[in-house]
Length: 477
Image (cartoon, rainbow, N blue to C red; front, side, top):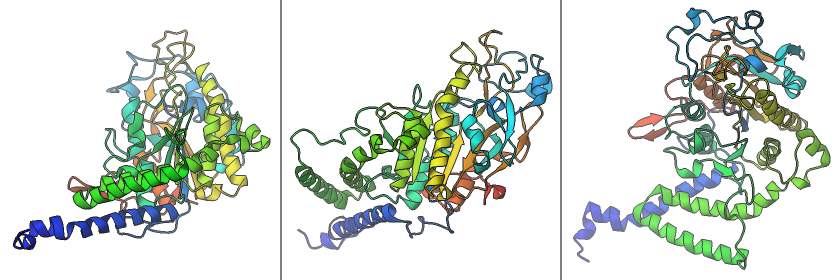
């Protein structure tokens, strides 16, 4: 080798220092990963900014758009003027997904009463939620910028309507990691007739290292592909193979200094650990009969109820963010399987009991105080009949201007209602809350300043709340 070449900057960084820099980078990345599994990180861009009230999140994502005017937001005027054309002042310049012409107001075919000391107004379709009315807080003034499913679902998940940004769970994994040594920080559970319209973009890590993306558990068979050892392969053989592969990956990382290789190493190690932890986690038969009765679960049969119980088991084991998607809330009224008279009650029966069982179960185990539960869809439904199926079927179009979400646990001040809508539930009347406001508040409860959890990409600092977001002080306990 020419000694003069050893003195050039290219050769110094490429050969003399390359291995040292690569090794240091790997050590730093893996150390962060290991720290993320055992507690908050302390580097410039990771960690808690102030004491956290919540340690973990269970996000009940009701994909499709639950009808707020049939579930939470009772409007006597809507009942009184049912069937009359909506005043032009409401729809002038409006963009609908499917409504044509001047639609007619549609009162709810369901009944409402007030429940708990808080006097929360809840539909007869949600008897479970009625029983925990004083444990939750309703936000009835949510609004979003998107009125079609896919962009609205991605927007609620990532703070931006186009795929490519990190999701909430990925930001949390990146920021404070996991308390589990053998499970991912971010797990996704799917139920309903299909996966969300936004697809994997709803749990993508975007431009963050891919170790932070959500890990979806499958409904049937192995929850994660290839989590079981192949026939004839022992754990010792698997370990030796993994050590060899990781040794090659470390050499490659030292040579090219690509952080995705470090992600690959971490992924292989996590996969090896999950081969032991996941089968035990998934075995719901170990739960007592009283728990199965509470949730309405049947071991071995995939359902939203099973996913709620599995979510509790995941957070007990240190998983930071569990997101349950249930994709059956789209009630346009095009037929009897797509309306607010038949379809909406059916999906409520599937989800209401298990969701409220989750709150009760966490509470009795002492986990609700530091577990934040968010129940939300990507938008609401119109207070008018869509009319696409004719007068025979009652259904509502997508409605981004006003909808309802509820939260419980994790430092949320319970038993209150934040915000309101106008007399027919069309527009927000007071205390408007955006998706960015909701995310900023959730991060605040987790001990994170939403303006300081950032990642530099393509020359600018990105964050979950983009350039917006205000913390809802009245939501905090």
